[in-house]
Image (cartoon, rainbow, N blue to C red; front, side):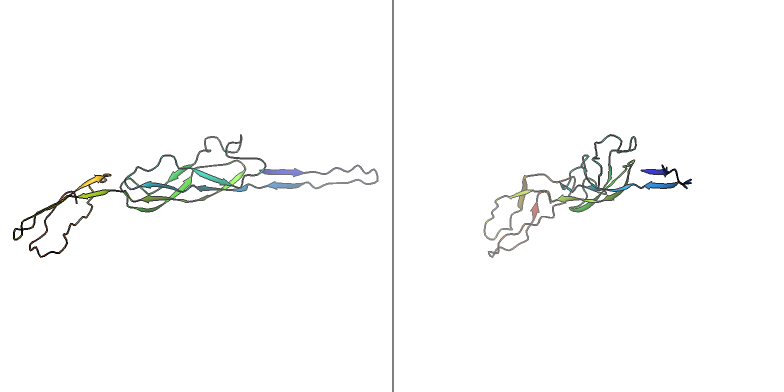
Length: 173
């Protein structure tokens, strides 16, 4: 990449040739840097190992070739708005921070997909005598764990069978 002089020379003995030099400009090629998609489970920390894919290297260059990157500017950095405990959904992964000697860099985002945290709830057996108030219905987390102080929003109900009364609930909800 750069600006180079174009000069001329004539070997003719019949002419006195005067050249007006020209210039030859080599511009930077375009290199597209795309953040690779990633996924985690709700409550996980932001991954520290996001990665990128490159498209547009020429002349045998690649991300590991000597002289491709400006000194200290050959490792991609990333922005992502997700923090541990952010809700389930998709968050943009935005790469930045690269600088190349012979390439103009175009960045493309990737997606961080936050998937649901699997939890299994065991509802405990309960009973009461006909005519007595309904017993408290209980449950427990059988497998998995609740993130932080999240509320699972659990409501327990019993099948209708003629018992009168309210349905108290206990457990982590």
